[in-house]
Length: 121
Image (cartoon, rainbow, N blue to C red):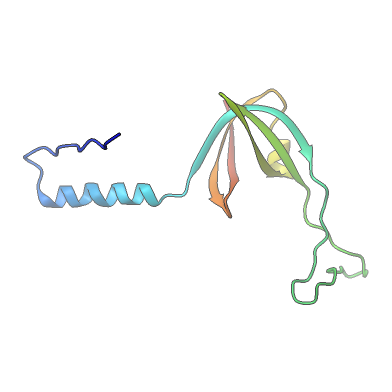
């Protein structure tokens, strides 16, 4: 399918055209994702131990006990025609409930959807 070319009004000056082009390019570069759906399931993910990248040894706290990353949750979201899954932190997971409808907004990070805000619909 060929792209349709929008004709610009004849009375537009060059600065207005440049401004429109800059706004369109900025919109194309914006890394934002919105996903609205119904929460199907929320599961806590197993905690993973912090490992030092250089030595490969576990990171220890002041009492020589291994440290772990914060609790993370897997949220299965039902959208029209499919299901999507996202990883949430504890605070985000506590703000949602099963069978509730929410708008998840965020950005793509390392090819995964990183949720930044959640709004109940």
